[in-house]
Image (cartoon, rainbow over all chains, first blue to last red; front, side):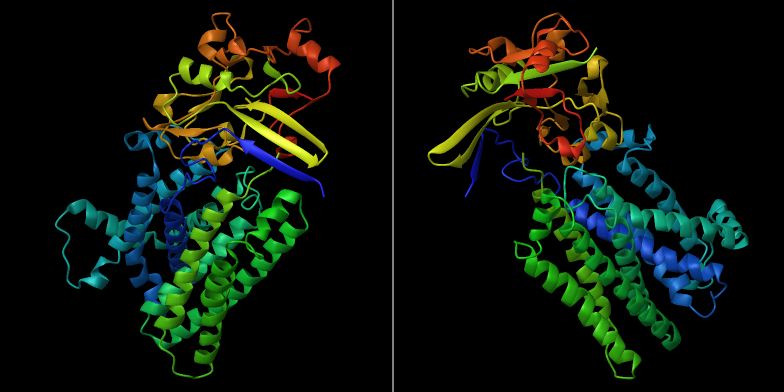
Length: 313
Length: 177
């Protein structure tokens, strides 16, 4: 047996023995960003398809959550910065090569867009509301007039936001676990699925619930396919990626991933939803909560495990 | 001009003088280091070999850290040096994640820091402090575009390697083996 021992004299905080420069802030943001993208995507989609009346939760009510979700996510990102008061420097440059620069600018677009979208539906929440400020009424009027073009902008930017949460990680070629192009689509689909879960949970209308149950089932199917694809890719790749995949195939993250994400977060809610669609009475909160929890655990595991995976030399 | 460092693993004794010199020269905060020594033992007894490497930022030609930086704080300097502009760094950690050598760290003062090849010294015509103190003189620093330079000559005449070439970073720290 050929053995190799590597002894390092380096012990930099948060770098050694394993990289831990990103704590809970980044995975929480990745989850919230995906969730916001999911809700906005469906709101925009069904506005474009002209089904606002049939699907009030998807198009209107659920979107009221989005500004709050994004603000919490942005605050988490802000907490992650080591030089917080310099955060504005993200907006003095546009760097096309840097996914984080993309993300910062997309958030700059999506956050105001989601607020404007809600302002125009404010009277749904508080009937007979009178905006005391004139320009708010102006915004309301303009948004309602140009709702369709706005929906097009929102659907594109929500897809960019959702896919970016994965690309942020996959662009790091130093971390073999992240360095796979399937991560962008996987995070996007997972984000859409959590968004659909929230809409399903909030909806009081049977037709809307059934529709989003079905959408969620399809998304779960795609997610499982992507996860299989992810591991097929790893195992057919170089030694560093095979090693990275071992973290989930017998390594430290095996149980949290297969138990927490795949079984609890995907398979169980899928079974519950199928049972519900077949007429069994199942509280909608169960599958919805499990999907959200699974989505969150998935982000935390991917960020943690990715930082452990590395090239050995 | 292409600055490069050539380190002779056959001459290095692993004394860590380079580490202390760097910490002293660059006022590296206590508990941190910009360069470090790796002891790599291979084989099965009695056929074992040890390789000692003084490692640091590789000042890569295709630097993932420069690519990933959202503000442009990580940038190339003349001669291919990779540096961080402190007042442009927001400390997001993207460059730390992107470095396959884990050469960067988050400075307690709120920016990301790493080896600069002692830019302040080489611009005065001096050698980087790690090179200048090495008691076995196993480290060489110079310009790869200059065919008369010691680094160029060594790479022509000796076997060498770079670290993790498969990541595609094109490092500028070479190890003679």
